[in-house]
Image 1 (tube, rainbow, N blue to C red):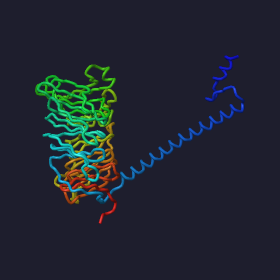
Image 2 (cartoon, rainbow, N blue to C red):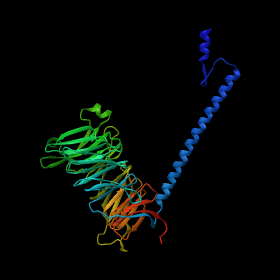
Image 3 (cartoon, rainbow, N blue to C red):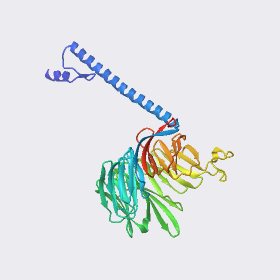
Length: 429
């Protein structure tokens, strides 16, 4: 009898425990459970509907914004600054990172310097990922990591620095060169050494470029090896996660060799995608754990510039069909005969768009939503559908321009001031 009661107690019907009470109590329990289940389902559907509507609205806003062209701008803020020809500028957490042989500064959207850290470097190089930046003295021994609050760590390397990169977690990698060997060393954001790969110059060659994935787990390198008179490029992939640990002791999970072809730039354009920029093509590798070649994008002419975003790669080339005797304002010159042509591809090798322009540009600034061409006092902002959003000639040379986290806002550095501007459809008085 007792065993039967226990069995009866643990019986479940629709997740309602039957304690042997009255039929009316059991019915009320089932009704309460059903109302809760229906309520939870409605709540989930409501949340999904809100997210779906927000996604649609965001897409519509982005689509309209990307197709909208602007004629002028208004100055949101302006600060007197002195342009330093030794300084370089990078977009950093929606603001500016300025670095030079004398120091590193973080500048907000109002043009105000939030903090400055002194350094002593002859040839500073810098890389940024998320909220972290690494600055190193190429050919020297100093390297430092920063976030939006200032310096996180600074280290002195035992050999001269060839290259550096950083992940969005703050882990960074430094390539060092001694007389007979190279060292690829990975550190945590506070400077603790995580791993070191030693290669000999005799067997592996000279480091050309290195790139670290966003999560800091994967590494991809380009090395130049001279075999007699024939140059050779070796691309090598490493995995510092479980897959690499199980593969072999040096964590190498793949490699590729190229003869008589230079590959000066490799980049994790996303956490699982690597772009290798060769002198005749772009090679896209998928690398979730191990690398595999995905597609090759050949160049038709000599490339002047390369750039990339989180879901695209791009090039700027000299337009092969241009009539060099013409000018940009020549009435006999066709629109397709512009001096330069920009081409943008997705990671499957499909051309997303091409864009012809005549500006004698000096730099290309690529973000996830647009590409900025800048030269002299002129800028041209091109959206990801291949349309120009804003073409403008300022009254003074533009030393640098970056998009901010604000909608249609940009930080522009001139010789004597730094301005934050916002694009406008109307001509300003």
